Image 1 (spheres, one colour):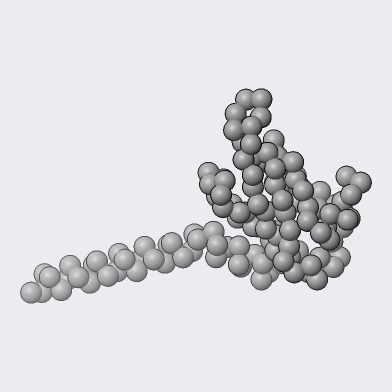
Image 2: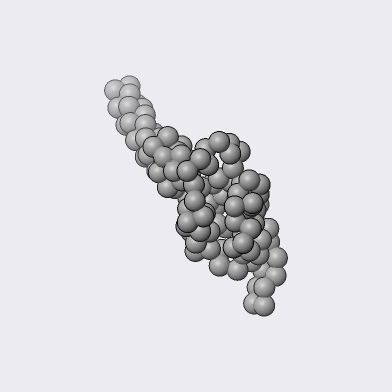
Length: 127
């Protein structure tokens, strides 16, 4: 009986340790934390084209939708649409900020054409 109780306690401790580690390394939690602290964070499942990516930067949260297509060599993400749900968070953003975000996206998707949705689209027209 005592051995069973010890085994149960050990299993509970291992399970709690596992849950704590999963919480600490959860990318969604890191995204939320970076958003609150107005820091940069890129959250994406590169292997899953159907899942949108999220970027938090300077207090704004951006979402990107990926579209698969063909290049000369293979099937790759060829088009990305990026927008923010709260355009009031864009106050103070410059073209340089959006160029930075484009470069970060291009690091993961070099063949993709990045399209911004309104109101960012108007600012980036001449790019």
